[in-house]
Image (cartoon, rainbow, N blue to C red; front, side):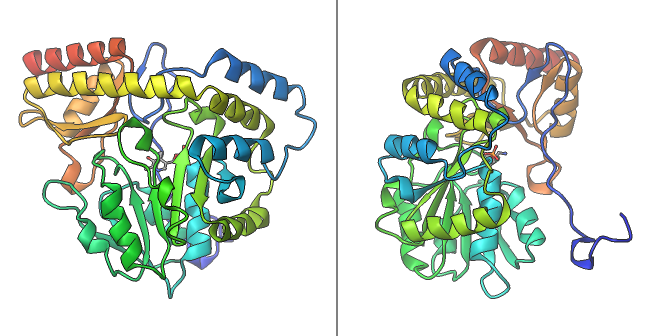
Amino acid sequence: MSRFLIPKHRDLVPYTPGEQPRILNLIKLNTNESPYPPAPEVVQAAKEEAARLHLYPDPTCKGLCEEFAKVCGVDPDEVIAVNGSDEILNFAFMAFCDENTPAVFPDITYGFYSVFAELNGVPYEEIPLEADLTVDPAKYENINKTVFLANPNAPTGIPLTVAQIEKILQTNPDNVVLVDEAYVDFGAESCIPLIRKYDNLLVTQTFSKSRSLAGGRLGFGIGCKELIRDLNTVRYSTNPYNINRMTMGAGIATLKRNDITLANCKAIANTREETAKKLREMGFTLTDSAANFLFAKHPRADGGLLYRKLKERGILVRHFDKERIKQYNRITVGTPEQMKKLLEAIRQIMEEEL
Ligand code: PMP
């Protein structure tokens, strides 16, 4: 720490991103990226924009927002484009939380919520998940705080229904309810159809998972026009050119081939169910994940040990040291071939080393 860091940041514990190692032939199942690369026309669009890198991108992201709005069935002024959905989470803390408007989220959820709360000096409450690792939606009703809910939740993959979230919206009319739909495309219900009914609903989505653009950094917020205007005020006050040209081109091309996204999501959901079935046959306990990852533990295998043994075999999964979930590993759903190798490695480890 330098002598210049201001006191309020001295205790800041930053978010720890998943490992991004450069190891040849690594089977990377640790950060929930898509195993399917972007379509050729998406790569082509990014290349064409690369030739114009001497010019600033469009700060209004007009074409991109129009295309996204079309796919979502909303108006362009009901969406905002952001540099990965992490950016809009920070914007939401900046715009909708302060010492008088604290935040609330589950104790086990996306780790960035508490980091953004700390960064922005926002008090927050963490509501423990139930014993079966589900979120009890009743605990968020009439809570009078800005609500942050990942749906499906991470790292459990367990979703709430839209009807359950609607009750949270109805009972907190004076607070924003942010529904983080990073993993919604793999089998949960989106709350986007509710944005005209509830002016306190902000939905966030990312192109990092279902849309094969984790490296491009693209996310969106969807909500009523007034909420989006507030978020744009924060965006223009921090980084008006938050979406670079190549990502803008790639994003538009991705949206024009929504058929590919839908097919990839279907394939990933199928692979998830097949892999879950095989893991259960091997004695693993799994949450009912609707996301592109599995959350699994085995009575005979310590979570951390299994993580390390898989890593020795060139397979990277995600292990969290948090007390309640340290027996688990979060495994991104890859291609069927990658899952076959994972299952073989686990079988070997279980038979030979545990
Ligand atoms: N929300 C959740 C629940 C996530 O797991 C992630 C990915 N780590 C994000 C948001 C952020 O994704 P990105 O910034 O890549 O859009």
